[in-house]
Length: 331
Image (cartoon, rainbow, N blue to C red; front, top):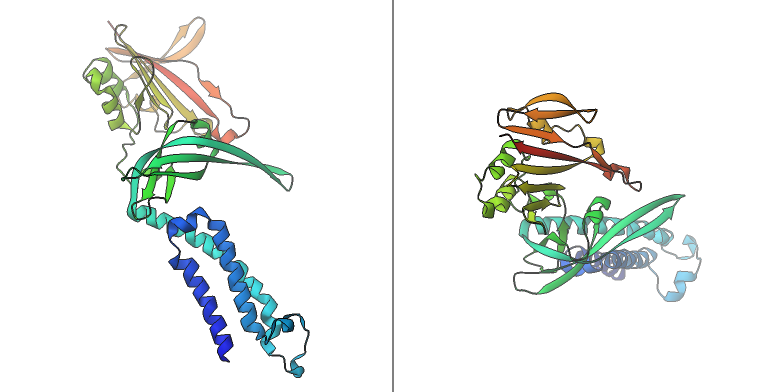
């Protein structure tokens, strides 16, 4: 093996090293596809030259036979495109994994604000797919502002709007490297997240003022993440979990709204399924000629309105139902 071929193979290794390790994660993330294809292209070029063992640029376009002095590996040179393409895919996967490991090891949780968003439809083989993305603005610990674009699911896209606040995790080593956290399980990797089901005793504690009015929000957040005050008085909502509570202290009533996916309507962790464990009995009664189920004990009555469905024709899996419960204090 001659010196020139050794140098070219060394350059191939150097290209991999630069793109695999040396380029900072945040720089790579901003132009990930460009860097992946650039690495694959450079690797192909230098491996092609190494295998071809060309003496000049003119020889690249010549068609010499082996017995005419052409190096045998020259016929393998065009196949250098194969490892070049493989490197593009491997590097893309490596960068994604590298980003995840960096954020998990050095992630800092903060809040970001949605400044824009878009959906884009693509058609392939007569099938139309829709992708969703949002642009997010956030500040790091040094009050430096950063913007980035994130791909999100259809359900997350429907629940955010321009100006809404989302959870963001960024790297303390590379503050410009960040991602949106829209899933509770993923968020729990970075902070403790209460994930309990709202139960009747929780609503009773609020209604009977066992929880001070100025502590209701804190109390709800101790049950599950993440509640905020609504625009109306005594109204609280959890947009992430699609829950809401409305308090009517003068009427001795509290309304609880719970949204569940239609395909998960029989899931065990729901408000209604917890009523039996909370000591409530179940019975049927007739109201306005219609039979309905109510739950009761010596002090409280719980009724529920007919289920309200929210059918999403574009994505049936994200279609949902709303259950509205009224907890009423008996005289």
